[in-house]
Length: 120
Image (cartoon, rainbow, N blue to C red):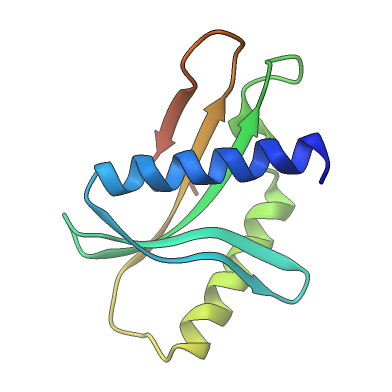
């Protein structure tokens, strides 16, 4: 497994733990449809939203904050995958949103986690 994939997996694991601590209920991890994937699908118990979460992890800021890795094209792809999930599960009676969780791993420091609610 590549270092990039290991960092991504570790970031998704930390993001899931973070969301659980925030009282979200994890429904599905790594939901795949076609060539795309939604990292985490969860329920925000506070306002009963179904939340599709994209996780972006980095080990440095050489290419900017991890949230800037989310392109317009990627957002469109995530919307299509979410639509497919809702169709497959016959869900049509719940408000949905897209969140982004970024993880910045830095040597000898605790990972920095940022949660962007209703990011796009």
